[in-house]
Image 1 (cartoon, rainbow, N blue to C red):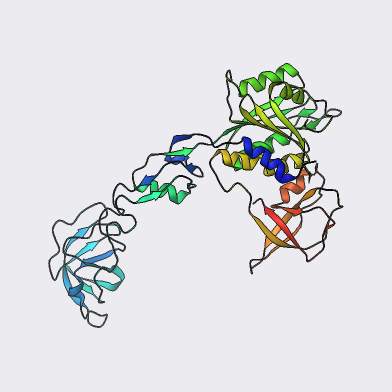
Image 2: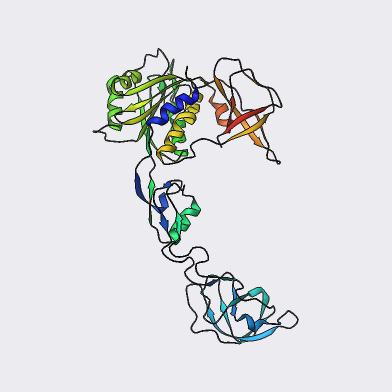
Length: 407
């Protein structure tokens, strides 16, 4: 067996970030920026009001109060998207809507709640200072400002800022297309009654969803039967110079244990350069990784929980690296065990499926999510974290344990 960190390091050496590409802004959420973005104009481009109210000269409000309001004529209305018909003179007011440009001559806005209609005039019931409720030009961004640079992960707010400076496309590291396929004559799909020795394919739906959750593009390569030519044809269609449905990475599950007699293993060993590993973890000890005609391929174990845990530890960080992400690891927290989490010493790190619950004071508590067998997928569905139990006897109730948060 090899240590977990060594297996992860072997994989990391062969994973590289995908080239940058221009994508529409609407498709860029979660992607990593590969260019500098500058503000080509001031944001906002003009001084505008932050409130509905009246544009005034602050000096005209001196001494105004609810008890002694000042009446001034309303000479115009300025809506958002419009401009004042003329400069504001002393002793006048203009009705103004949020976002509208400040008229020349005005230096303050008094909010509508501090006014009262007075025929063609308005009563100003408070004194306001110069600059009141005015957003100056360039208040958010000055023209020429470097806003974002390479390596920024684009959130919804990032996209809004990019739109505000006129960007329709951004240069980012694109999402990898990740092919996922299942193999085996024993696998069935859908509600068809199972025959002797048959099981339904649960790994492929789980893995496709995990790929999508990581931000990559899942490509369903279907269910392949135990036929060497069928498997080879499917692989060649996905990778290599003659690929008709090209992907940037491949994931399969099953057939990676030592001594397995499996057509996938035979084809991969012949076509690719794969490293068949036994990693010192439980579940998910068997793992295959290598390059198939220049494309990384992850051979994950076949048990459902093992397949998902293996994806979290090996495939997910690699897909994030391909997208240019530096934060490839799931967050971890220290938690208190609400029940014993015992395990025998066996030279492996155990990953227990747990429910992690935050306390009001910021502490975390964990309990088992259910059965811990590598075939018991229901517990994985209930879990929102994996408790990391180093080699030894585990932890007792009330002891601390490191937890990898999945949700």
